[in-house]
Structures are given as structure tokens and as C-alpha cells.
Length: 482
Image 1 (cartoon, rainbow, N blue to C red):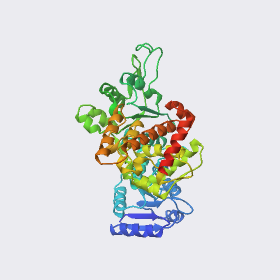
Image 2 (cartoon, helix red, strand yellow):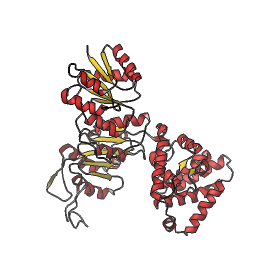
Image 3 (cartoon, rainbow, N blue to C red):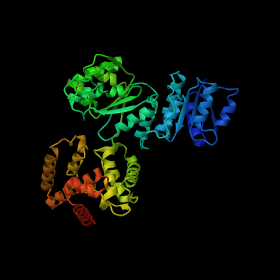
Image 4 (cartoon, rainbow, N blue to C red):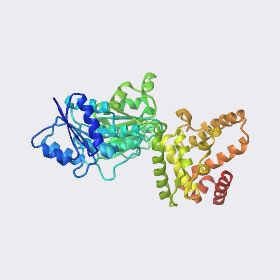
């Protein structure tokens, strides 16, 4: 009969987990501290170990290190209520079989013990993460699962495809994968393939030789060479032209390429992380994306949850963004009132985390006083009738509109404005003209202040108006809402 050890200073956790494992037919021993378990190791050996991280005296990571020295083949499952990337990567870095976030499902814990006993290979070792490792915020269940996946995947050399709606933080995940990987001492190079004209993208990726085309006066080193020994992050990979997809496929398959206009074969060792908000399977079906390239990129897929599916994180994110924005703008610290925070948590946030962050930046510089109340929030949060109109502001900031439809393309916002106004008039809403004008003016001011990080003189120059006009309009807006 297999013997499983449980280390946790919380008696209730030890009791319920031990009973569940005994019911599954295992012999169980439990310990309330690591030193007690280490003393027993001199004359006994477990088949599987569950250990908590935070315990008095020797913690779970130290126990893991000591256990692996004497019994490297014993699978260890690390448990913790602190499911951030640093914790998960530290567990896998130390040789943990898996990471079990608390609170956990007892059936899931039992199945995990069964897999450990079946002899699955442990995760690969990775070097220590730098002190200022990239962090992602979130304590909700979807984010806990994401952190756990990042901790495991970072320890490999596998290519990763990150999917998720616009504004969910795909580049942050890519940076976290790099910072906690074997390549952490190498470069992290990012390229948004949708932001580079198609005729220049090949040169950006693979470089070019002098004289390769008109204007190529000297050799240019591309992103693949720049990322040698590190990680190359290709954002919006779904927008890559078909011809370049073929070249990218060769690099992924062979690790080699030619610069544009070159004859020297360049070999590189680069981990590729790609990201997209599009459905690549649908693009493959339409002949817009190569199926074999998708298979090369999609070795491991990480899907980022939209903010509306992790509402428990909104308060944490909002206050963090607000604190950061007030520090950057060098203004007094602020906080959200209970009513204002409730309204933030109730909103669907079609632009996801990026939209929330941009809102906090604006509120940090345009709100008077230390508390942001319900009346300080923009109309798209406080007035459902004109929520559609706020899509205009979102479009101007490159944020997805309702239902995830991209509304940031040039020329879209007049149509969005016209449809929103017509809808409001059909609903019999009074004062449509004044309300739309106020929203439009306010959006212009907030967009300029956001770009200039709250500097009104610079914002006035961008808008082509006087500084006093900005001050007067902001003041009159607060007065009408007050």
C-alpha cells in the first residue's frame, strides 16, 4: 500500500486531505511542521508528499530542497493559498511534481496523488528568477489557474500560444514566461506584427543586407537575431501575411533563415511565444493562416480570461492602477468610494484590464479630492442609456467595443456615434444633444491628459486649445455632475 505524507500547520487541512486519501485506499501520515517529517525520513520513505509552503520554521520550499537531496525520486505536491507566478515557478524550479492552489477540491487532490504515483516525469529545473520578476495581479480562480500554468510552462523550452481578448495582458504573460524560464538571462524581444507594414515586416523579423532594396544602406539585424538565446514575442500573430508565415514556419522547424538579400545562413536558438485575440482555427479554415504554422506555435496554449469573468480581481486591479497613476502624475493618493467600486465591479469591461487601467489613469489626474465617488465616474459606467456612446471613447483609445467587436479602426467612431445617438432618441431619452456634446468634449480632454500623464499645458497643445479652456471644461463637467 502506497504511503502519502501531508505537511501543513493547519490541522483542518491535514484532517480533510488525509481522510480523503485514506478513503481512496492510501496509507497517510501527517505532520504539522517540516522538521518532524525530516526526522522520520531517516528510517522511512513516503511514496508521495503534499507540503504547504508557509509553515513555522522550515518552510515548504526548504523542505522540498532537503527532501530532493536525499530522495530525489519522491514526487512532491506543493500546496499554497498564495498562487502567484513567483510561488508556482519556485515550486517547479525546486523539482515539485505539481502545484495545488488552496482552497482545493479533494477529488482533484486525490487524482493528483494518483498521477504522481503513476510515475509521471517531474518538471524540469529552471534558474532562480530575478528579484524584479514581472508580476500579474489577480486572486480569482481563473488567475490562480493561469499562474499555475505559467509556473509549469516557463520551466520548458516549448513554444507557447497566448490567446485572449484585447486588453487582457498577453504581453505581461509572455514576459512572465521569459523571466521564469531557463532563458531569463537572455533578451526578451517583442514585435507587434499588426503594427508593422507588410512590406517591412520581413526585414523586421529576419533583417536585411545592405543594398537588399531601395533605402537599405546598411545591414539590419532582425528580431530573431536580436532574441538569440532568449525569447521572441510575436503579438497579433493572426495578422501576419501568408508569405511570411511560410518563412516563420521554416525558422520554427529548422532554427535557420537568410536575411533579406543575404546568402549567409543564420542559425538561431530562440523560444517563440505568440499571441492573438483572433480565432486562428477559423482563419485556418478560411485559408488565411497556415495549419502547419498553427501546430508549430500551439505546442502549449494559455488562454487569458476576460475581466468580466474575474470580477473578484477588479478591486485589487483598480486600486493598484490608481496608486501607480497618482505616483506617476505626482498628485495626492486617491481611493474609490464603496459605491464607485461596486459600479466598477458590475461593469463588463469590453476593453478588459487595459480599459480599467486607462480609466484609473484619467481619474487620477482629473478628479479633485482624495475620494473618487460615483459622480466622478464616466457616463458609460453611471448611465446605461449612453453606454453605447462610450464605445466612441473606447474606439479612440484602441479598446474593443461591446461584445468584443473591434471598434478602433479609423473612420469607425462617426458611425458608432450616429447609431448610439439614434438609439438614444428612439428610446425617448431627453437632452441627447447636450449629453452627447458633453461626453465628446470630456473624452477629448481625458484622451489628451492620458497621453500627457496629466500635464494640462501639454494636453492643451495637443488639442490646439488654451490651458485655461481645459481647466474651465473640467471644472464645468465636475460642477454639472455634482
